[in-house]
Length: 631
Image (spheres, one colour):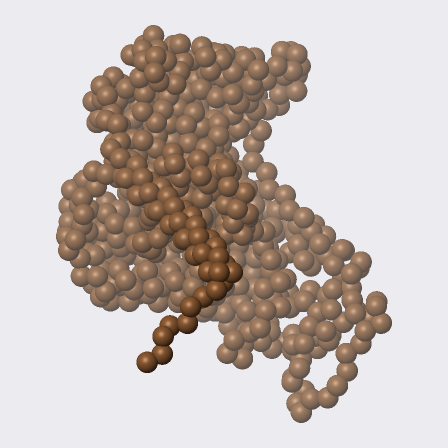
C-alpha cells in the first residue's frame, strides 16, 4: 500500500498561502453577495411600504412635469431608471392618470382644494387639453376650489389654468397668447439641385401634402387653404373656451392681437403686467406668497413643503391604483391605446405596430370577460398594410359580438382614420385633427448624386422592369406609371372601405377625402365622426352597448397593454425607493447604461429613409396613409 506523498516545507508554506488567499477571496465574495442580497431585500420591503394616508382638509397639488401622453413611450425598466436619475426623458404624464385623479377628487371629502401647476407640462394638441379642461371645470363645479399658479404660461398651459377659480402668475414671469401656426422646412432645392437626389412622389388627392417638402420649395396653395381652414376652427374654439372660463368676450380677445405691440409697450414690456391688464390672471404672486395663501385658507403643516397640508398628484394616484379591484373573470370594458406612427411588425409602446397592436385587439377578442372595446387613437397614420392589419381585427371583434367604440385624441388622421372607420361609433373632440383620407408613395433615386462623385451604375437585366427600382438608377416613365397605378388602387381601397364602414356613397367620401384634413367639428359635419366626446364618454357608450350599465363606476375598465416582466416589476419598485435612487443616482455605470437602454424618441418623419427599405412581398414601394399635420 502506497503512503501519501508528504509535502516539503516550502510546498507547505506555498499551499498555506494559497489556502489563505482562497479563503479571503471566498469571504470577500460572500460579503459582497450577501450585502447585495440584503440591499435587494431592503429595497423590496421599502418598495412595498405603506403609503401615508390622505388626511382631512388636504390640498391636492397637481403639478406634473412632462409631456401629456396616452401611454408611456418607454419601457418600465428604462422609465424607472430614468426617473431615479431624474432624466427629463422619463417625464411623461398619462392622460388617463390625470383624468382619474381629477374625477376622484370631486367626491373625496378629504380634498379641500386644488393647487394647479401646469407650467411644467407640454402638449401635442388641443383635444386632450380640452378633455383635461373639462375635468377641471367639473371639479370646480363640484365645489372644490382650484388655485392655479405658474412662473410662466404658454397658451396651451393657460387653457388649463383658466379653469381655476383664481389664477396667479409670478411677477417676473409672463404669458403671451399668440395664435396657431404651422410651418415646415422644404428640401427640394437642397436635395435636387444641391445634392442631385431626385424624389419621385406618387399620390392621389390635391390636399395630400405630407410629402410636399421633398418635392417643393414651399407649401402648395391647396395645403395652405386646407390647413388654415381647420386651424381657424380650432383657434376660434380656443378663444371661446378662454372667454367662457374667464368671463371674457372672445371677440375682444381676438381684437387684442391687433393692438398687442402697443399694449405691451404701454406696460414697458412687462408680460406679467400685460397678462394682469388683459384680465388673463387675477394677481401677481411669488410661489412663497401662494403657499402662504394656501396655508391661511387650509391647514398649516410645518413638516410639509410650502407649510400647508397637502397630497401630491403621484401619491394620490398611488392611492387610487391601490384601491382598484382585481378583475379576474369579471365582465369589463377593455381599452387599447393606439398612439404614434403606424409601422409594420411588433413595436413598443408609443408606436403602433401592425402585429403588436393587432395582437392586443386579438387578446380582447379571445377574452370572454371583455364585453366591449374602446380604441383610443392618437396617430398621424403610417404604413397602409399595417393599418389594414389593425382594421381587420376591429372587424373581427365586431363579428365576435363585441361592440367597438373609437375615441379620437389629438390626432386621428390618414392611417389613424383607417383603423377607426369600422367602429360602431366614433367620438372626437371638436378640436381633434382627423380626415386626411389619401395615399402616397415615394421613391428617391441617387443617380445624379453619384454622378457628381464619378460613380456610375450599369449592367444588364432579363426584362425591362428588372432592377428598375434600384435607387442608384434613374426611374423610368414605365415604372412611374406602375407606381401611380398602385397608389391609385390604394386610394380606391381607402375610400371604398370608408364608404362601406360609414355607409356613404364613394362619391360622397371622395368629396371630403383627397387628403384633406379636418377638425373634429368639421369632420362631424361631413359624416366622418359620429359625436363629440372624450375617452370617458366613449367608455360609457361601450358599456351601454355591452349592457354593463351606463354610469361611470358601475363597470370595470381594463387597459390591455404589454405586461411587465417579473424583473421589470422588481426593478421599477427598487428604483422608486430611496435606497434605489441613492444607488442608481450615484452610479456612473447606471448613467452609462441609461444612455444605451432608454429609447431615443425620434419624432422627425424619416420618409426618405423608410422609402429605401427593402420591400416585402414583391411590392414596388410602400404605400403610406400618413398625415404630416398638427402643431
